[in-house]
Structure formats: C-alpha cells, structure tokens
Image (cartoon, rainbow, N blue to C red):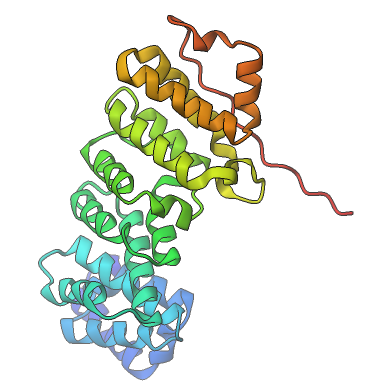
Length: 290
C-alpha cells in the first residue's frame, strides 16, 4: 500500500501515527527508516519529531546516522522547517562525540543523495562545504562519496564550489582515501578552471605520495588522470607549463609506473601541439586464492 498516494491523507496520517505510537520498534531497522523517509511529510510535527527520536534510539551508531540522514532530508526538502534546520545546526555545534560524528555522517549522505535534486542542490552544496573540513574520516568519506559516481558530473558552480573547498582542505583526500573517480571528475574541470585543477593535483600528489603506487589504496588507480593533468598543463605554456613539468617529475620521483613509461617512450603528448588523449585507466588487480 502506497500511503503517499492515499486519497484520504488524514486517514493515512492517523494510521501512521497509531502504528508508530503502538510499535515504535518498527523504526529501529533499515526498512522502518526507509519507510519514515518516504512518509515523514504525512505526519504532524509532533509525531514526526517523536518518530525521529525513536530512530535515534536504534543503537549507538546506526541510530544517530539514520537520525542525521532523516533530519537532513527533511531540511533539504522542506527548508521552512525550523526544527529540522535546528537539528542540523546542533550537529555542527555540539562538542566532538561519537554520537555527533555519526549524525554528521548521516547529514553528509543525505546531502550527497540530494545533491542532484534541482531544488536541493544549492543547500546540499553548502552542507558539503561545511562537512569537508571536518576532521572525522567517516564524515569526510561520506561527503566525498559525491565524487564516487561513474556518471558525469555537471561542471556547474555547485560542483566547482565543492572542488574549491577540497582544494582549500586537501587533507580530506588522504583522510578519506579517495579513489580514481574523484580525479576523473577533476580532469573534466580542466577547461573551466585550469588553476583549480592544477593546484588540487599538486596538493594531491604531495599528500598522497606513495599511496599512488599502493594497490591497497583507492587512489592507486588515479595516476593516469594525474599524468593527463600534467601533460595538459605542459601544453598550456607559461607558468602552467612549468607546473606541469614539476607535477610530472613528482610522479616520476614517486616511481609511478605510467609516468615512467611515458617518459621512457618520449610520448608525443609531451610535445607542443600533441593530442589531448586521456591516459588509460588502471584496472584493479584480481585477487586469487592461494
């Protein structure tokens, strides 16, 4: 039964409120949280707040995370809800505790999930920019899942704003073990903001270092995109050419195999006027049982 399509919304609300009041434990499981995410707008404010409270009591980790995600979803879809906005602000303002961390993880996942919703994009962008500087690995990882998609990202002001926040707080790249998808999306911004791509790539190589050669790190597959950035910069002339050479040399110093191969073969992409060809991606090694 789809309660959201019920012709009698008053009856649907009364049914849900009786259900939650009689069986609050229904909300302390994944299915219950998903249900509440879809039907919370049908509840009265008092009943909705009580339902969110029941979710929060689930356990020490899943409860606060689900609470943060539900409250942020409410905040993004209904920005006029002062109660939801207040819970978001409280999560940022509270002193560091595991409960606060898990609430912010939920806020981050909700922001990522709604980032492409037109009416929510600006608010979700603002939240992601507040979450990226958080020192928590869990919170940073959740926020950076915005770039783990294999689909193209729109290179609009919202995407560029989040990328600039990563540039200003590059430690999130190492803290959250970003994978190659981030750098593939970064490369797409090259023609729009070359300085941004150049600076972020330089800081990434400085911070990630030997992780670029470790198959146990998610960033291991990012080397082709970083080499591509270095080669494009070298064709740009001026100071970008110098920085591109230095970026490529840094990859050589780290022993990145693709960079060594390009240098050894005197790849035409190093010469002026060469074709802008994206480096092929590495493939993840297949683990076989011994």
